[in-house]
Length: 255
Image (cartoon, rainbow, N blue to C red; front, side, top):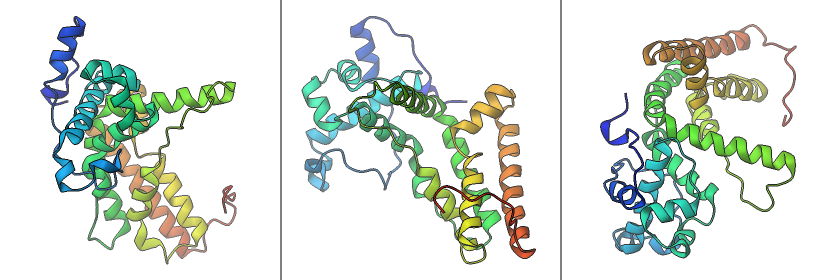
């Protein structure tokens, strides 16, 4: 269940909308991989200055809107936060940049996850234990980001995306490769990569869509299925490496 501060609230008048957005919650996790939106905010002094506060207000406002199910534009966030559009675009020059920053905030401790275990199956289980509850807590945010990704894909196919910066997704690649790192010297590169790719199918907001939305599982059962599938994939990859591997598997495009 989402914390009370994250529950969507009804939209009233524009004035009331802006008032409740000022009571946005604060995410207290440091996201070490998140790039700064403006170089002027770098440094300990600027991090506490008016520019940092304005950027934080925009991020919190965008997060609130995305947790309510919207995929807001920079202009819409600026209006809700009562920040000028010109100022808003200085911090976030595109919708993709804004949504990426909100996603990184939502990921929080997932991005700085580390494991001391040398057992790849345990490491993967620990990653899932860290990541999936957080992803579920910010489910609406990640679904809104997924919606933007799908919308951009459709417009790209139709030739109407023009020069709009693409929203890219890819944190799970590094996270999963790190989780199975002990297998890097036990598996051929092709099989190591294939395992990371297979695990990526059951890691992320897409798992919630399949297991909760389609299958109707509750959080506990969803997590149980995801953990079981992840462990089975790791064990299968290790077993194949011990028995000569699956030489019939098709090569990936980038091999």
